[in-house]
Every structure is written in C-alpha cells, then in structure tokens.
Length: 418
Image 1 (cartoon, rainbow, N blue to C red):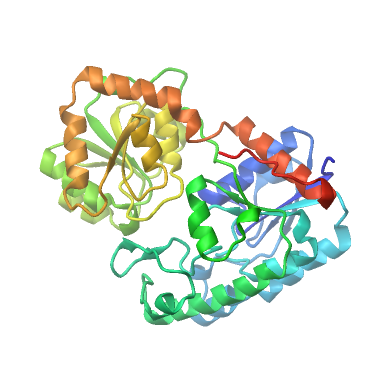
Image 2 (tube, rainbow, N blue to C red):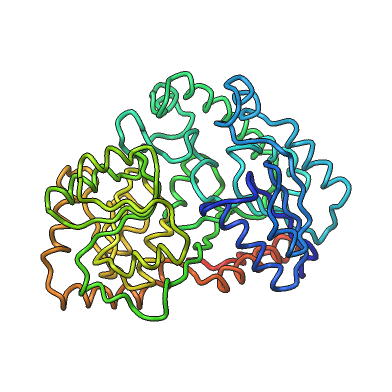
C-alpha cells in the first residue's frame, strides 16, 4: 500500500547536518518522488526551501533548551505540553489511514511529550534512532565525568548512582526524570519501526528495553565530494571535520599532530579553538565550511581523523571521506571502526591508549605511497558498505512507510538489513 502523505517531525527546520540535516534531506527526496509532505517542527519553521517545495510546515515557534531560561528549559524539556497539543491537534484534524509519520529529533524542543501525541498513530510511525536518546538519559552512553563509554543499563541502580552528566549531578537527575517519562510514553505505542543508522546500535537499544522486533537498519546517506578519487598518497596533511568541542577529540588530535610535526587542518569551529591553537600553533583552523569547502580540504588530505571520545554510531565526515578515497583514522569505540579497519579503509586505534592516536597518525605519515594509495582505493570501492546513497536511502524510507501504512497482518521487515 502506498502512503498518501508523510509527516516528518523534528525539533528544528534549519541545520548544518545531523538529524535535522537528514530530516530535511528526506523531505527533498520525498517531494522529488511526488509524495505529499508535512513538516512538524519545534522552532519557528522559517525555511524558504520547504515553502518552495510545497511542504506544509507546522511550527511551535520555540527555541532550543539551552536558549531558554533555566526553569523554563527544565519544564519544557521534561514534557513540552505545547508540543504535544500542536501535534495531537494536527493528527486529529488531518490523519488518514495512509498517512505515515516519521519522528527524527525531539530532545532539544519537542520533548518526550510527542511520543504521547503519536501514540494513537504509533502503528504508522517510524522512530529514527540517530543517537541513543531513545535508550540513555544523556543520549550517548557516555560517562562524561570519566570520559569513558558507559556499559550500564539505563535507569538501573548502577545508572542512577553514577554521576555521568557533563554538567552536574542535578542535571543527571533531570535527565533521569525525563527518561522515565520517555519510557512510559514509548511503552504506550505499538510503533511501526525503530530505524537504526548502524547495526551496532541494536545491543545498546535493546539493553534499554527497546523491543528487538522493532529494530531495522537504514544506514545514513553519504556522497563523494568529487568524481575522481582523492590521491591521498600525494598529500601530507590530516584533516578534521566537526565541532571543536571536548567530546569530539580535537585536543587529542592537536597534541598528536604537534608531537609528530604533522600538518593538520581543522574544518569547523567551537569553544576549544584557542586551546587547539595553543597545543599545535601550526594547525590550520578554517571555521565552518560549505560542502564545496569541505571537499577542497579533503582533497588535500592524506587521512581524515575522527578522534571522537564518544561511541559515535555514525560519522558523516568519515563516510564522505571514504567515498572520496581518503583513509580514516578513528577510535575503536566508534561503531564504524571495526568495518573501516577490517576493510582496510583506514585505521582503528585503542581509545584507551593515550598514545593510540599518535601511533596511528605516525603510521599514516610514514607509510609508503603505495600503501596509502591502496588504502585510498579500498576506501573508495568499499564506501557503499558504510553508507547508502541518497537515492538508496530514499528507497529505504519509502519501504518503511509502505510497511507502516500496510494492514498489520501483511507487514514484514521492509527496510534494508544493513
């Protein structure tokens, strides 16, 4: 059965990337296929592209939690009643048996309250797990106080007793309360599917009680930056793409490149920019770049470094780098690491070894041109196993929506398994 309308639900209507970037990409791809789309968002909904595409925009007009006063943020973040009313009202007025719903980001504005609003149409709702907020109170299975990945069961006694929040124990308590509300709201719905961006997300999600029968894998899309392979073997520079914040690991990279005397370019911006410059005065910091700008810098790269301290389920920069033929260096806690290392598309280093990143980059610097060229070619050829193309991703979305609106007796697993 074909869906007649897709309702895309997300905190924001404008983004650099991440969940919002993917939500907006899905709108473009779905409209290109002639599907009617409604975009429900928590912010003001000011996006000229959505209007040009003929998309109905339903907006709450609120800001992200960190843009509000502390008390207002705490209340709205726990349970945003206005968001629930907005979505429930739209459903009450417009829902049909062939309307499919797709929930992307909700943790910054919409809150767990939207799960309650979606409960009556849960059978036709796909919940996208771009991260671990569906499972873990802090959204990343990370003990920020120890800067270590967390293996505890969410909301278990061990979890409740651990101060893992990046800010304070009080904020951990607030996150626990919010997650308890999320669990109750999620349990009330008979959801169509939970779409994971990597198969390695299954264990952390089921550890938190998400039913395994709901899980399906739909890898994120990534495109090559150019038609030709980047000749990484002719380059001598490491490139980092992302926010200069502690959890992304730019300071670890700056220390390693300074110790090795290895040229490095940081494509991005963030609160640690001055510290990066202090640790490696020779580092180049470009600020945020558009797609063409990122492609230019990747074209100068011998390798892309993704030194995140988080167990990242996906790295768009890494996926785009391998499509371009740029080898990737990343920690073994990243979900993509095992695949990249096994396929010879880059190096995975021990995240718990203080010299692990430096050793991996030392190999990249010292390896012969033939070794780097072979790694580059394997990356270019094997990139499709890490990420889909936009068109294949759209195929997977439409398959999920068809399954969501089909009579329950005819349903099966409709999205790609990996």
